[in-house]
Image 1 (cartoon, helix red, strand yellow):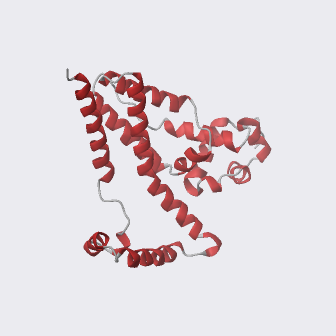
Image 2: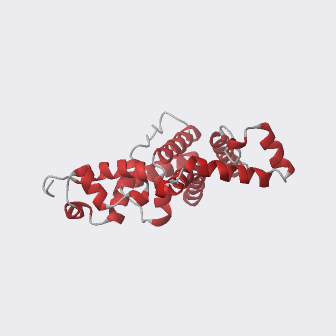
Image 3: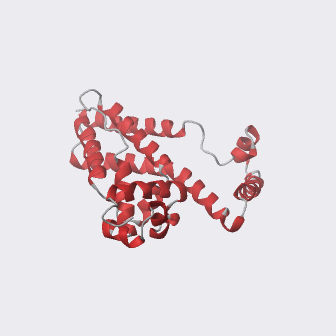
Length: 228
């Protein structure tokens, strides 16, 4: 496919599919060219380089987060929807967690989301600095909760290289981790209540529990500010 036929949208969409399947390590212009039946040079014409392509792909998926109607919801409900939407998006595209640590990421969709988030906290009653801190705190909470899924995928890919059996290696590692943890009473009690293969897994609804606690803390701060 010549460069005049390709579009930036095609390249970004195919890059997202490739990133979802293989992560950041699997994204390269040669593999992308195979999927688009195009030469790598044709893609450089549209997206410049891999770093810029990762930036464009990341900004594209930020548009997947639904921005709630702030006139129809109170601030806490809107904040919860935005945080949950981000968490869902990160779990759908776990490579973004890796990208956050190694790439300069920005774009109109990310900025539109950030603008909406700041509006939520300003409407709640936070001043500019407090709204910035509230938004950053929730962002880091969501990002931190999404690390587990991204790490599991990365580990499975690494263990599966060169024909390895990732499930067998994970099972062996979990057995060793369980044996170590059994020496500690609180860990042992939890292991004995559940299957060993579930050890180290996050409890059910841990994201919802943590988000509710975090937003309640922000709400309490607002109440303290309003108390004479």
